[in-house]
Image (cartoon, rainbow, N blue to C red; front, side, top):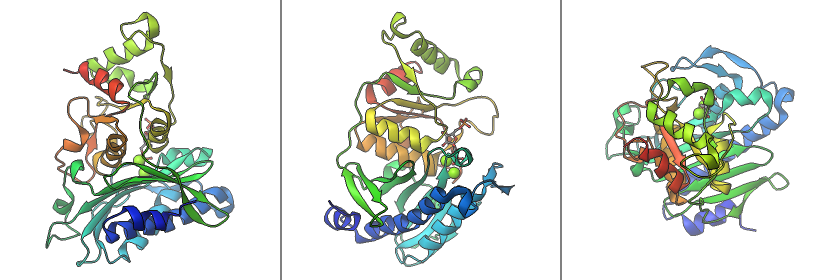
Length: 322
Ligand SMILES: O=P(O)(O)OC[C@H]1O[C@](O)(COP(=O)(O)O)[C@@H](O)[C@@H]1O
Ligand SMILES: [Mg+2]
Ligand SMILES: [Mg+2]
Protein backbone atom coordinates (compact mmCIF):
# COMPACT_ATOMS: atom_id res chain seq x y z
CA UNK A 1 0.00 0.00 0.00
CA UNK A 2 1.56 3.29 -1.09
CA UNK A 3 0.29 6.49 0.54
CA UNK A 4 -0.04 9.70 -1.47
CA UNK A 5 2.72 11.56 0.42
CA UNK A 6 5.23 8.74 -0.15
CA UNK A 7 4.32 8.62 -3.84
CA UNK A 8 4.67 12.40 -4.20
CA UNK A 9 8.05 12.34 -2.43
CA UNK A 10 9.28 9.66 -4.83
CA UNK A 11 7.73 10.89 -8.08
CA UNK A 12 7.23 14.64 -7.95
CA UNK A 13 10.47 16.52 -8.66
CA UNK A 14 9.16 19.86 -7.39
CA UNK A 15 8.22 19.82 -3.70
CA UNK A 16 6.04 22.94 -4.15
CA UNK A 17 3.86 21.11 -6.67
CA UNK A 18 3.74 18.06 -4.38
CA UNK A 19 2.63 20.29 -1.49
CA UNK A 20 -0.07 21.94 -3.62
CA UNK A 21 -1.50 18.57 -4.64
CA UNK A 22 -1.37 17.22 -1.10
CA UNK A 23 -2.88 20.43 0.31
CA UNK A 24 -5.76 20.28 -2.15
CA UNK A 25 -6.50 16.70 -1.15
CA UNK A 26 -6.80 17.69 2.50
CA UNK A 27 -9.58 20.13 1.58
CA UNK A 28 -11.14 17.63 -0.81
CA UNK A 29 -11.41 15.12 2.04
CA UNK A 30 -13.47 17.71 3.87
CA UNK A 31 -15.66 18.28 0.78
CA UNK A 32 -16.03 14.51 0.37
CA UNK A 33 -17.12 14.17 3.99
CA UNK A 34 -19.74 16.91 3.63
CA UNK A 35 -21.02 15.39 0.36
CA UNK A 36 -21.38 11.98 1.91
CA UNK A 37 -23.35 13.47 4.81
CA UNK A 38 -25.54 15.31 2.25
CA UNK A 39 -28.73 16.60 3.77
CA UNK A 40 -27.43 15.70 7.24
CA UNK A 41 -24.72 18.34 6.81
CA UNK A 42 -27.21 20.83 5.34
CA UNK A 43 -25.18 21.16 2.14
CA UNK A 44 -27.79 20.33 -0.50
CA UNK A 45 -29.83 22.81 -2.53
CA UNK A 46 -29.26 26.17 -4.12
CA UNK A 47 -27.17 29.03 -2.77
CA UNK A 48 -29.83 31.41 -4.13
CA UNK A 49 -27.28 33.38 -6.18
CA UNK A 50 -25.49 33.29 -9.55
CA UNK A 51 -21.79 33.13 -10.39
CA UNK A 52 -20.07 35.55 -12.80
CA UNK A 53 -21.14 33.33 -15.69
CA UNK A 54 -24.81 33.72 -14.88
CA UNK A 55 -25.16 30.12 -13.65
CA UNK A 56 -27.11 29.51 -10.48
CA UNK A 57 -24.80 28.31 -7.72
CA UNK A 58 -25.46 25.33 -5.52
CA UNK A 59 -24.73 25.71 -1.82
CA UNK A 60 -21.91 23.21 -2.19
CA UNK A 61 -20.38 25.14 -5.14
CA UNK A 62 -19.95 28.05 -2.76
CA UNK A 63 -18.81 25.98 0.24
CA UNK A 64 -16.25 24.04 -1.85
CA UNK A 65 -14.96 27.23 -3.43
CA UNK A 66 -14.48 28.89 -0.04
CA UNK A 67 -12.71 25.85 1.43
CA UNK A 68 -10.29 25.47 -1.50
CA UNK A 69 -9.64 29.20 -1.63
CA UNK A 70 -8.78 29.29 2.06
CA UNK A 71 -6.47 26.29 1.74
CA UNK A 72 -4.59 27.66 -1.32
CA UNK A 73 -4.28 31.18 0.05
CA UNK A 74 -2.41 29.76 3.06
CA UNK A 75 0.16 27.92 0.91
CA UNK A 76 3.55 29.62 0.47
CA UNK A 77 3.91 28.15 -3.06
CA UNK A 78 0.69 29.71 -4.41
CA UNK A 79 1.03 33.14 -6.09
CA UNK A 80 -2.63 33.28 -7.00
CA UNK A 81 -5.78 31.34 -7.72
CA UNK A 82 -8.64 31.42 -10.19
CA UNK A 83 -11.95 29.61 -9.81
CA UNK A 84 -15.15 29.03 -11.75
CA UNK A 85 -16.96 30.62 -8.82
CA UNK A 86 -14.73 33.73 -8.54
CA UNK A 87 -15.26 36.62 -10.96
CA UNK A 88 -11.56 37.55 -10.93
CA UNK A 89 -8.29 35.86 -10.01
CA UNK A 90 -7.25 36.22 -6.38
CA UNK A 91 -3.68 37.17 -5.40
CA UNK A 92 -2.15 34.96 -2.69
CA UNK A 93 1.53 34.84 -1.70
CA UNK A 94 3.69 37.19 -3.88
CA UNK A 95 6.70 34.89 -3.23
CA UNK A 96 4.87 31.80 -4.54
CA UNK A 97 5.83 30.35 -7.92
CA UNK A 98 2.51 28.76 -8.90
CA UNK A 99 -1.01 29.61 -9.99
CA UNK A 100 -3.85 27.20 -9.23
CA UNK A 101 -7.02 27.21 -11.33
CA UNK A 102 -9.98 25.11 -10.27
CA UNK A 103 -13.58 24.10 -10.71
CA UNK A 104 -14.56 23.55 -7.06
CA UNK A 105 -17.43 21.26 -7.95
CA UNK A 106 -17.94 19.96 -11.45
CA UNK A 107 -21.30 18.51 -12.41
CA UNK A 108 -22.94 20.32 -9.53
CA UNK A 109 -26.44 19.88 -10.96
CA UNK A 110 -25.92 16.26 -9.81
CA UNK A 111 -25.39 17.04 -6.12
CA UNK A 112 -29.04 17.04 -5.17
CA UNK A 113 -29.67 13.72 -6.92
CA UNK A 114 -26.71 11.96 -5.26
CA UNK A 115 -24.74 11.40 -8.47
CA UNK A 116 -20.97 11.68 -8.87
CA UNK A 117 -19.34 15.13 -8.89
CA UNK A 118 -15.71 16.24 -8.59
CA UNK A 119 -13.15 18.97 -8.01
CA UNK A 120 -10.90 19.76 -11.02
CA UNK A 121 -7.55 21.56 -10.75
CA UNK A 122 -4.81 22.89 -13.02
CA UNK A 123 -1.41 24.22 -11.92
CA UNK A 124 0.58 26.78 -13.95
CA UNK A 125 3.93 28.43 -13.27
CA UNK A 126 3.74 32.16 -12.58
CA UNK A 127 6.05 34.34 -14.67
CA UNK A 128 8.73 36.13 -12.59
CA UNK A 129 7.29 39.27 -11.01
CA UNK A 130 3.78 38.58 -12.33
CA UNK A 131 0.85 39.71 -10.22
CA UNK A 132 -1.25 36.81 -8.90
CA UNK A 133 -4.35 39.01 -9.03
CA UNK A 134 -3.89 39.94 -12.69
CA UNK A 135 -5.86 37.89 -15.23
CA UNK A 136 -3.08 38.21 -17.83
CA UNK A 137 -0.76 36.17 -15.57
CA UNK A 138 -3.03 33.15 -16.04
CA UNK A 139 -3.55 33.29 -19.79
CA UNK A 140 -1.21 30.45 -20.71
CA UNK A 141 -2.00 27.60 -23.09
CA UNK A 142 -2.80 24.19 -21.58
CA UNK A 143 0.52 22.74 -22.75
CA UNK A 144 2.16 24.95 -20.09
CA UNK A 145 0.39 23.15 -17.21
CA UNK A 146 2.80 21.64 -14.68
CA UNK A 147 0.10 19.52 -13.07
CA UNK A 148 -3.57 18.74 -13.46
CA UNK A 149 -6.05 16.46 -11.80
CA UNK A 150 -9.37 15.89 -10.12
CA UNK A 151 -10.89 14.47 -6.99
CA UNK A 152 -13.97 12.40 -7.78
CA UNK A 153 -16.70 12.10 -5.17
CA UNK A 154 -18.50 8.89 -6.13
CA UNK A 155 -19.18 5.61 -4.35
CA UNK A 156 -15.52 5.99 -3.36
CA UNK A 157 -13.48 9.19 -3.35
CA UNK A 158 -10.58 9.14 -5.81
CA UNK A 159 -7.68 11.40 -6.69
CA UNK A 160 -6.40 11.26 -10.28
CA UNK A 161 -3.52 13.49 -11.33
CA UNK A 162 -0.56 14.02 -13.61
CA UNK A 163 2.60 16.08 -13.24
CA UNK A 164 3.57 15.36 -16.85
CA UNK A 165 4.87 11.82 -16.29
CA UNK A 166 1.79 9.66 -16.72
CA UNK A 167 -1.49 9.53 -14.85
CA UNK A 168 -1.89 8.08 -11.36
CA UNK A 169 -5.00 7.30 -9.37
CA UNK A 170 -5.48 7.04 -5.60
CA UNK A 171 -8.44 5.90 -3.50
CA UNK A 172 -9.35 7.61 -0.25
CA UNK A 173 -9.34 4.96 2.47
CA UNK A 174 -11.84 6.43 4.96
CA UNK A 175 -10.59 4.02 7.64
CA UNK A 176 -7.22 5.78 7.80
CA UNK A 177 -8.17 9.10 6.16
CA UNK A 178 -5.46 8.75 3.49
CA UNK A 179 -5.29 8.47 -0.29
CA UNK A 180 -3.55 5.22 -1.29
CA UNK A 181 -2.24 4.28 -4.73
CA UNK A 182 -4.72 2.39 -6.86
CA UNK A 183 -3.44 2.56 -10.46
CA UNK A 184 -0.25 3.93 -11.94
CA UNK A 185 0.48 4.66 -15.60
CA UNK A 186 -3.20 4.73 -16.64
CA UNK A 187 -3.72 4.23 -20.40
CA UNK A 188 -6.83 5.05 -22.44
CA UNK A 189 -7.54 2.34 -25.06
CA UNK A 190 -7.14 3.82 -28.57
CA UNK A 191 -10.44 2.40 -29.82
CA UNK A 192 -13.90 2.55 -28.31
CA UNK A 193 -17.57 1.84 -28.91
CA UNK A 194 -18.87 4.25 -26.27
CA UNK A 195 -19.68 7.93 -26.74
CA UNK A 196 -20.95 10.67 -24.42
CA UNK A 197 -22.72 13.78 -25.67
CA UNK A 198 -25.82 15.73 -24.62
CA UNK A 199 -28.06 14.66 -27.53
CA UNK A 200 -30.71 17.23 -26.63
CA UNK A 201 -28.44 19.91 -28.13
CA UNK A 202 -28.19 18.14 -31.48
CA UNK A 203 -30.00 20.78 -33.52
CA UNK A 204 -27.59 23.50 -32.31
CA UNK A 205 -24.34 21.74 -33.33
CA UNK A 206 -22.22 22.46 -36.39
CA UNK A 207 -23.27 20.32 -39.40
CA UNK A 208 -19.95 18.41 -39.20
CA UNK A 209 -20.72 17.25 -35.64
CA UNK A 210 -24.28 16.39 -36.64
CA UNK A 211 -22.89 14.18 -39.44
CA UNK A 212 -20.42 12.41 -37.15
CA UNK A 213 -23.04 11.65 -34.48
CA UNK A 214 -25.55 10.55 -37.13
CA UNK A 215 -22.93 8.03 -38.31
CA UNK A 216 -22.31 6.84 -34.72
CA UNK A 217 -26.03 6.21 -34.35
CA UNK A 218 -26.14 4.10 -37.52
CA UNK A 219 -23.92 1.56 -35.80
CA UNK A 220 -22.71 -1.44 -37.78
CA UNK A 221 -24.97 -0.47 -40.69
CA UNK A 222 -23.29 2.93 -41.10
CA UNK A 223 -19.89 4.04 -42.42
CA UNK A 224 -18.19 3.54 -39.03
CA UNK A 225 -19.09 -0.15 -39.17
CA UNK A 226 -19.62 -0.81 -35.46
CA UNK A 227 -22.35 -0.54 -32.85
CA UNK A 228 -21.88 2.21 -30.27
CA UNK A 229 -23.34 2.60 -26.79
CA UNK A 230 -24.06 6.00 -25.20
CA UNK A 231 -23.56 7.41 -21.68
CA UNK A 232 -24.36 10.87 -20.27
CA UNK A 233 -23.79 11.57 -16.57
CA UNK A 234 -23.88 15.39 -16.97
CA UNK A 235 -20.69 15.54 -14.92
CA UNK A 236 -17.60 15.94 -17.09
CA UNK A 237 -15.32 14.75 -14.33
CA UNK A 238 -17.24 11.47 -14.05
CA UNK A 239 -17.31 10.99 -17.85
CA UNK A 240 -13.54 11.55 -18.07
CA UNK A 241 -12.99 9.14 -15.21
CA UNK A 242 -14.97 6.50 -17.09
CA UNK A 243 -12.88 7.14 -20.21
CA UNK A 244 -9.62 6.89 -18.24
CA UNK A 245 -10.93 3.58 -16.87
CA UNK A 246 -12.25 1.88 -20.02
CA UNK A 247 -12.00 4.27 -22.99
CA UNK A 248 -14.67 6.27 -24.82
CA UNK A 249 -15.21 9.66 -26.41
CA UNK A 250 -16.65 12.68 -24.58
CA UNK A 251 -17.97 15.67 -26.50
CA UNK A 252 -19.37 19.05 -25.56
CA UNK A 253 -19.05 20.68 -28.98
CA UNK A 254 -19.60 24.19 -30.29
CA UNK A 255 -23.27 25.05 -30.57
CA UNK A 256 -25.21 28.08 -31.69
CA UNK A 257 -27.68 28.34 -28.80
CA UNK A 258 -26.04 31.52 -27.52
CA UNK A 259 -23.30 33.19 -29.62
CA UNK A 260 -21.64 34.50 -26.44
CA UNK A 261 -21.11 30.90 -25.23
CA UNK A 262 -19.58 28.81 -28.02
CA UNK A 263 -19.31 25.56 -26.10
CA UNK A 264 -20.38 25.12 -22.49
CA UNK A 265 -17.17 24.01 -20.83
CA UNK A 266 -14.48 26.36 -19.58
CA UNK A 267 -11.00 26.13 -21.08
CA UNK A 268 -8.81 27.02 -18.11
CA UNK A 269 -10.23 24.84 -15.36
CA UNK A 270 -12.19 22.15 -17.23
CA UNK A 271 -10.87 21.69 -20.80
CA UNK A 272 -7.13 22.09 -20.13
CA UNK A 273 -6.73 19.92 -17.01
CA UNK A 274 -8.86 17.12 -18.47
CA UNK A 275 -6.91 17.35 -21.75
CA UNK A 276 -3.61 16.97 -19.89
CA UNK A 277 -4.87 13.82 -18.14
CA UNK A 278 -6.31 12.32 -21.31
CA UNK A 279 -3.17 13.03 -23.35
CA UNK A 280 -0.85 11.82 -20.59
CA UNK A 281 -2.85 8.58 -20.73
CA UNK A 282 -2.33 8.27 -24.50
CA UNK A 283 -5.68 9.73 -25.59
CA UNK A 284 -6.44 12.88 -27.57
CA UNK A 285 -8.16 16.16 -26.70
CA UNK A 286 -9.32 18.53 -29.42
CA UNK A 287 -11.76 21.35 -30.09
CA UNK A 288 -12.51 19.34 -33.29
CA UNK A 289 -10.29 21.85 -35.12
CA UNK A 290 -7.13 22.08 -32.99
CA UNK A 291 -5.60 20.56 -29.86
CA UNK A 292 -7.30 22.04 -26.79
CA UNK A 293 -3.95 22.53 -25.06
CA UNK A 294 -2.73 24.67 -28.01
CA UNK A 295 -5.57 27.18 -27.64
CA UNK A 296 -4.17 30.60 -26.65
CA UNK A 297 -6.56 31.82 -23.93
CA UNK A 298 -7.86 35.38 -23.85
CA UNK A 299 -10.00 35.23 -20.71
CA UNK A 300 -10.04 33.25 -17.50
CA UNK A 301 -13.64 32.06 -17.95
CA UNK A 302 -13.34 31.44 -21.69
CA UNK A 303 -15.39 28.57 -23.13
CA UNK A 304 -14.11 25.85 -25.41
CA UNK A 305 -15.49 23.09 -27.57
CA UNK A 306 -14.42 19.68 -26.29
CA UNK A 307 -13.88 16.36 -28.09
CA UNK A 308 -11.65 14.05 -26.04
CA UNK A 309 -10.92 10.46 -25.22
CA UNK A 310 -9.77 7.37 -27.13
CA UNK A 311 -7.26 8.55 -29.74
CA UNK A 312 -8.64 6.79 -32.83
CA UNK A 313 -12.22 7.87 -32.14
CA UNK A 314 -11.23 11.51 -31.49
CA UNK A 315 -9.31 11.52 -34.77
CA UNK A 316 -12.39 10.13 -36.52
CA UNK A 317 -14.60 12.89 -35.07
CA UNK A 318 -12.05 15.55 -36.07
CA UNK A 319 -11.79 14.17 -39.60
CA UNK A 320 -15.44 15.20 -40.15
CA UNK A 321 -14.39 18.80 -39.43
CA UNK A 322 -11.55 19.04 -41.98
O1 LIG B 1 -26.48 20.36 -18.47
P1 LIG B 1 -25.70 19.61 -19.47
O2 LIG B 1 -25.78 20.15 -20.86
O3 LIG B 1 -25.93 18.13 -19.41
O4 LIG B 1 -24.17 19.89 -19.07
C1 LIG B 1 -23.41 19.06 -18.31
C2 LIG B 1 -22.02 19.60 -18.27
O5 LIG B 1 -21.99 20.77 -17.50
C3 LIG B 1 -21.08 20.63 -16.45
O6 LIG B 1 -21.79 20.21 -15.32
C4 LIG B 1 -20.43 21.97 -16.20
O7 LIG B 1 -19.72 22.02 -15.02
P2 LIG B 1 -20.22 22.82 -13.68
O8 LIG B 1 -21.16 21.92 -12.94
O9 LIG B 1 -18.90 22.99 -12.99
O10 LIG B 1 -20.82 24.12 -14.13
C5 LIG B 1 -20.13 19.52 -16.89
O11 LIG B 1 -19.59 18.82 -15.85
C6 LIG B 1 -21.07 18.62 -17.68
O12 LIG B 1 -20.41 17.88 -18.66
MG1 LIG C 1 -17.51 22.20 -14.25
MG1 LIG D 1 -18.35 23.80 -11.14
